[in-house]
Length: 113
Image 1 (cartoon, rainbow, N blue to C red):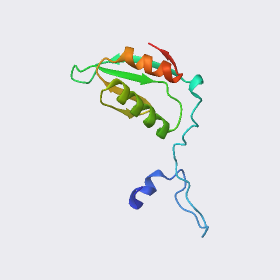
Image 2 (spheres, helix red, strand yellow; image 1 turned 90 degrees about the vertical axis):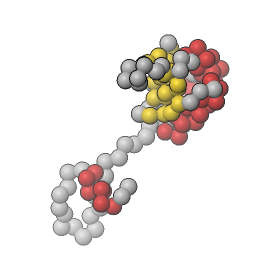
Image 3 (cartoon, one colour; image 1 turned 120 degrees about the horizontal axis):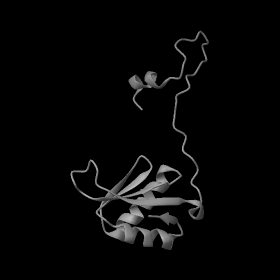
Image 4 (cartoon, rainbow, N blue to C red; image 1 turned 180 degrees about the vertical axis):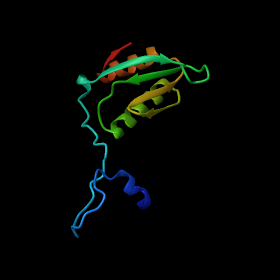
């Protein structure tokens, strides 16, 4: 984080006379990743706001960003498509719902279409 933007993230304290005071910054604490068997993932097809292009969305993942990125990479390679992970959901290019369900079921995830 850039130094000049840190002051924007301070929580509630404007000024302190304490010489040793450290500001507490609001940070999004990542949740621990749930085990594979406890994950309930929803697979949907979406084309709203995407210039008519279809994408497969995988939502409902609870866990750390690194684990989400690794799952995204697995799905992209197994399905042979491009995609990304944003805001806790996986976006895969095209209609690959069936293939995605097969890959996730093989890995042990619970899926719902």
